[in-house]
Length: 507
Image 1 (cartoon, rainbow, N blue to C red):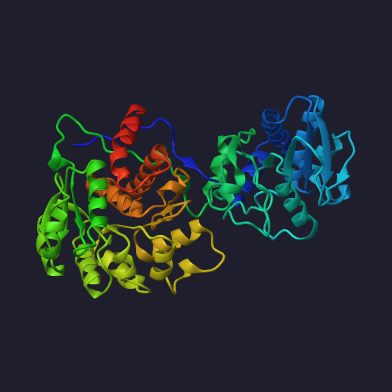
Image 2: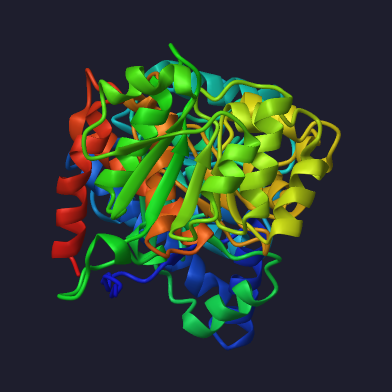
């Protein structure tokens, strides 16, 4: 009885470093010279620089010896022609420039200084030292120069990524530029959204440089997973019709912990109800019934003492989405509850204690999910992730957060939401999204419980696990952004109506 909201913008694909190389190669093979692409990239950088530097101001352009440096040479030429006083410095020898970068350098009529570990007084710095494909830690002069730029406090425009940031993982390779703004090309890279790269980038700008749609498709064709920026174009929220009623909107069941540990379940239940589930029930130990009843009104309450009680309750197939974990307690009893819930074949969200109870036993959890054909979402933070996936290749050193999450999803046979400032959502088919729509104010007790409830509420309404998880993370982040300082978890469900209303208005 639901119709999806049709959002205007399509899902935004991200390009890995290797995919971007394929895009460039495909564009060149189709007849667009590499120098033409470089000139377009340099022009985009120059345009950004004009917005930050005063007319006729002094600009320091720091170039490396690769194509990133070539973009810098193009920008320097355009800015000098526009009346800016450009001081261009090269890290390395001019003779080391090759290909298109060498051709771009030939057009520069001014002197080429040596990039050393000092920064002159200028109005703006353009960082064209290293691009997204950097695969080593910065050392020596490069390391010292980056430190000097950061100490200077001068605004910086980074070309592609801030020098020192790994374009795929967002990791700092030794030391990295702290940019004011970053201009990248064709599409964002994972390192623009993953921390600490995201913080180092400052404001992001994506410039189209004439590669074309065919080259983009060619670049994405060999990607091992579909990688997205999490945003409304990636998912469609349920929409009510004239025939909708509470029984068509799903029934979410949230399991409560014992007395004095009930708040987390109520927060989750409130999130599920506010996001649109038609019915929400809290299943509570008898000793906690009065405590829960004192706080619940529209949310229903039922006693549940054991896995057998839960099994009896799930004879009602209208209970179509389950959430276990917040405040539930750890140990064998919780493992038994999870086994019953997974075996019921419903939509399932597992968080907090439900994950910790399977410490180093993710294969057992995966078997429960597989055997029950549950449509499951796991929502660990980094500590829970490390405990649950201990001993698997999902915790291998050196992997990016996207790769760790994707591997975890494959192992668990479930969608995994690895929470944090740069939450990553991955499905077992390696469809992956990075969320950058949030705020540090969400780092407060109970915030994750509300997120779990929002996911459960969307699952109850029929969304598939990846879409429900991705949408919930974005909605949760948007609610946090709206409130700002002073946010507590109880505020989040009450902010959802405005978030949903605005999304419906964009349809």
